[in-house]
Length: 530
Image (cartoon, rainbow, N blue to C red; front, side, top):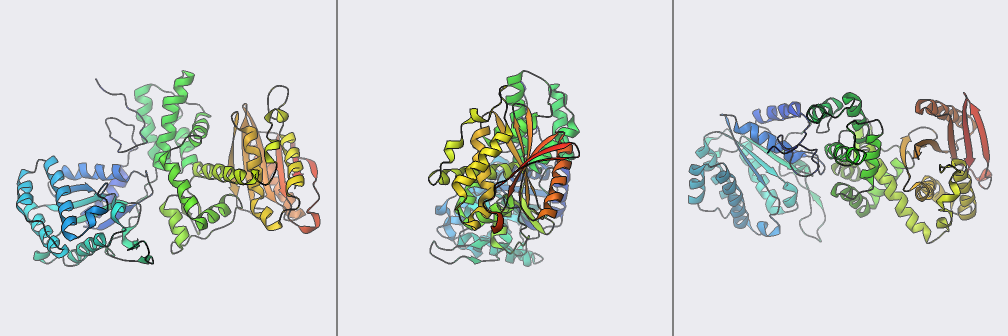
């Protein structure tokens, strides 16, 4: 019986089991690098399709008479495998032997098992030459999960040996792998190594012959449609494929795990619960909201990296909450860390949060983290009573929400330090809002880098949509321009009423808490100043 295909969000994607994006263009670019005999690292964040890419390359190379692929993984080796050169060589031999046996290459297995295990890295290099000569083809070595050993000097010695053999590859006695592909989180080309727990971190270049890997691993909208079309054909599900692909890209920026995960939630949860065969415009939004409420290893990794690095946390906070510009400089260790872990992406001269799903994840995390800390200092929980903010028909009265927030700010924060308020004003509002809409509504944020450093919120509650803009007071002229921008934004969103929260940090008006009703271009805007 043929198994029903599904969207896959864990492990390797298999064409006969999973709906997959057509990555043939990416594979073709990588294959050209193999043909050129390049050594390189596929260094991308977790769950970015690295292992699936290696498997696809492995299958393609097996079909060729010119190449002999060897694919191994350093997953699970542990520190014991790097005690000394002899132990490492023995582990390396074992991994190769398992691969050759799975390929049923008995002649190579015989050669391997009859060879003495080298006890030094240089002798391992000579043995590699003998192995490659014995195989008689262009050998492509692929090593997955190299990060498991990248903090080990012996591993660097191994890379250094491969580098030396590469530089002497025209010497018949230095016969070596035609191409080596390492896959992992780090760029091994410029590995930052810590030799001992108490040692100072330092940079090493054990593999500086590696070429840059510039293949775009994100899925673009056209590639996403290549996954959706077979799904529609095989299931009979109705959808506007192009619009769905663009919407998926809008929220995920093509991050492979997120694209598949959102599709999986819609297919296996939302459609099943509602017993329908059509994807509608709200499904992706609802799937994103569900995804953000669930724990997964991908999100765990993002939060862990923020919690473990205060500098990274502060830069992320500046970008997401304060709409500050952060220059893209790969030599800045914090920026480099954010890009390596997939939190940042370079956009022209600046860095941004990788995708809108991560933006929401980070907002929610920071708001909750802030709320927990502030509960110990203020009476924020006294303003949580959801029923106070509801209309008679059970919907949300957002004017009441803003007026109560204004009251809260006046009572609890009027005497707080100005610097604290300027840094945390938006975060206070998000922490205040979250329990009010929790359960029946959700909010989505858009940072607008401008003179006023706007943060736009779209809150949905019981199928109603509320547009709220948070901004810093920068004077009357900037304010009038901002009101016009909000009016235009309301038009784009198809609503007639909007809300404005102005954080005024000028000393002159610090304790003036105003409300204002504005009508512009037939749009009604209710504004508060705190």
